[in-house]
Length: 356
Ligand SMILES: Nc1ncnc2c1ncn2[C@@H]1O[C@H](COP(=O)(O)OP(=O)(O)OP(=O)(O)O)[C@@H](O)[C@H]1O
Ligand SMILES: [Mg+2]
Image (cartoon, rainbow, N blue to C red; front, side):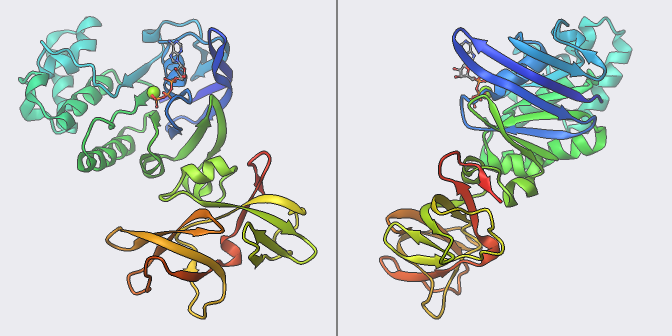
């Protein structure tokens, strides 16, 4: 395993900058997830590390070596793709062992290594099958085996689970985490799925239009999102975000419909008069039994099994609440929300950055 460090790495395609001065230091053995919406530059970033795409600017280091000018195979990375990219005419064993064959390893050694990898991935009984004769999850494992057998210094995963059904995704996610615990190989995992990111990562890198919005542990990113963008992306549902006006004199915020909500001036010393974005998590607000609080008009609910999500509007802006089954709610009803001080978050209306 090796540390990976990027300094001011950029990528331009013609006039478009799709990765913009990215700085990132990944420790040896760390599992880092790059999270962001489609088109934000995740794959491009990964491909530059792998050497499949040249950088336009900046430096990439793997271990102690600057790899910008190294061939992909000299970088010690193994990449696992979304579409597996298995050789259809080769058996599972041949697919897994291909890199060793190319490297000229004697057959007996190859077979031993293939068997040990197949064992680890639960593919022992499929070694003679062709990819066509495997399920999606099994193909994904073969793709992982093919990467693992090279004993890379770094694993690069590009949305490897997105072709799988929901249950298999959860199972493979756990398997990837277990493998990482066993092998300890530095891993970079690209996804647009925040649940995948939260469950897999030691640290998450949230990207937005080619730039890094925030780097942090899943807990940090969930609890203290650095921007409204991160806040709305993380959590299911994402943070409720509502436009309000602050009055520091009175210590309250005013919603679009004129409702007032008091905030704690001792906690929020940096709030200034004027418009801000107010945020709170669906799971942190409660229905106020005494009817006093922020007025919300409900429209519909979604059953989650262990709880319910109810959608409504506060001053014409959508808000979501997560409630227990014993809490009463009926559609088209107005209710009062109580939002504890500790659950309130504020972001600049202009820049979207967090106000501390
Ligand atoms: N070879 C290319 N030539 C021109 N533009 C490209 C090329 N490859 C990618 N892009 C553009 O760069 C941007 C980032 O693409 P990238 O594939 O890195 O996004 P992504 O975050 O991986 O998205 P997704 O989640 O959809 O896979 C996109 O706007 C894309 O259209
Ligand atoms: Mg991609």
